[in-house]
Length: 377
Image (tube, rainbow, N blue to C red; front, side, top):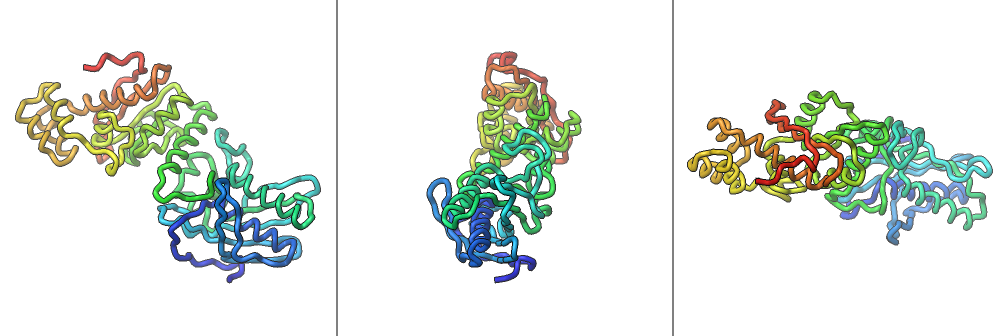
């Protein structure tokens, strides 16, 4: 056990993972128990929304006359989570009579500065479910120990401001640190849900800011090109990555006037083929499909055969470029058709930007709505 003022080492990985919200709740419970009983429960257990009751070992503890503080090391299991190994601290003290439970951002926890998130502007970036879990802890202990449930909770994250640079927080307008997240309290290893959740929050922020044009790109190179092309603010750039379907489906329910999708030739080929998830482990470039497209746009039988036998999309692009065949425009049109079918017959206009690996603009499609699509050939 170390004092909370000391830097804690990272613990070994465990198979299962817990969210920052679960860790903050456990730290809050242990600190509040110590504040009213002078005893730190170690380990401390909490009840999660789906009924699980995990136990957490305390990493540090501190008890003063008017507050108690506990730190817990977050273990994300096998999930590649930027906050794995982070020290989540909760400092609790009794607040003003009748004030209820109040939340404060300590060092390393961000503050919300833009509308559109589930937490109002000016509040610590502690999401609704973690707040509710901590309120429940306070209410349960208030009943058990006979005190008024007026408690101030300050959540901190060791090195949280540095960790936040590797998250979407700066783009979402959360400044000063990370967010305290979690809806179930459990981190599912390699889950796509966190990424899609961030895309959705990005759309919410853009809409709340009155932004009418947003862009989702498959990677940093295409994002840089698209942003420069349209002079978009950073918060209009959605971290789509491979999740084109997740972004487009949310936009269909929460529309903006215009959407741009940017990416490399290979990723957009898969979108043109109808794939919603562009990850290499979940969708592949269909070279037979590309060969058929080459024939449709006037490529020779020999070129179509070479495309069919190609190993990479880049090789196809190089073959077609050498033959002066504009396969890029055809792929862009196909990707646009796929995307607009997901968006449906609304007023959302969409264009496609195809970018080379070095950031060179290969194709900028026309801007169309679903109703302007030509019949498929």
